[in-house]
Image (cartoon, rainbow, N blue to C red):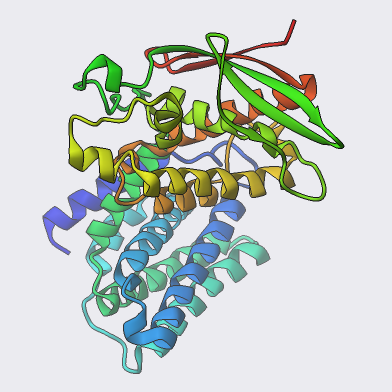
Length: 363
């Protein structure tokens, strides 16, 4: 490994330490080992998909770039905790030599070597550190070979992981700029807005209508499910998207503030497809939230859900918004959703400049 390669690895080790949320726990090593094993399984799963689908799995390299980056994070954290002096040896033991056998056998060897590390850590004992160190070096060599087989640079995988981690747990939180700052005021999402949710009975069903400045707008919504779950209030999620992401094709349609002065943006970002996408995101998140008491008492959204949401919105302007803003939009949206559902309505106040969504109970 060259001096430049040593530099990126050293930087990655340093930055990974600052994002280690397991630090300080008595089971720190065990959690890192478990995480490394989980990511190794994800790497093997991607290879399995590629072998099964062949040309029908064009996302293979991109997915492998992400999975190897995630594995690398756990690997360097565990290596540093086990023996901080391992970095220099890692840099000198990387080999481009590929073990004999098929790609599948190579990746199986890689997975087995990770299992060997877990076995040592699980067993413990006076020589556990020395044995774990030796086995981690074997993992490192096989990791390099597996990455080369997949056509992925570990340096690129580390860079991708750093970018993803920075979007999830940034050292400083600065909201992404509003997408319509350069458009006329009538084509901007309102910077200040108050919306009233009113619940009414329609036979045995409950219906929610929206009012703004004393005028009804939008559709009257029911839960549209046999077992009522409050989805009639789901428009709150669109307003949370507007407040915290500066993005909501649905709200733009409701308030008639599409960016008509730019036909490309009007069609591609504010059109029907974008609105359908936002509704799909809301439905997917709602399905997960319903299993978790609508995030009551939850401060964070699991990373897999956030990644799924980001995959949904690829190709649209909102894909540039970092993970942490999505998490905030979801958590805040569900905080207000629970209040609306409990109080059977209420009033929302949006401030896009402050990225704030406030709730007021009905009087």
